[in-house]
Image (tube, rainbow, N blue to C red; front, side, top):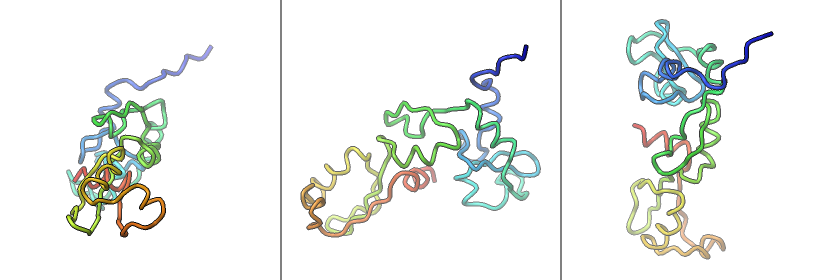
Length: 160
């Protein structure tokens, strides 16, 4: 009889897959260099070579497969209250809809925000109190144009 697969990877596996740049659980696609240093997909978007040894990065098929196991970690917004556990492959999708994500207000009216990060749950209150924009003005399209970065982009910028 075949042995049952473990439901979660051992703790040392989680440490072995940690991104060497941001020190977080890696976001897919997981990269590695010729020397085996792991770099998450977010960090790899900003570099072409390993931050530790300067060798070329490529997608790590093994790390990607390992991350598909029942290898879930806390949402990057856990410090804001999210209790969802996500795999490396699910992080971007989850961040796009996470109720605890941050948005970046880029309103150019007075006072300008200069890319202030705001929890999504507080965003309409921010528009009302800081920019005097009412919810009904947003719904009817009567408010001034404003720009918001959401989810993954805001999270990625907050890490650097």
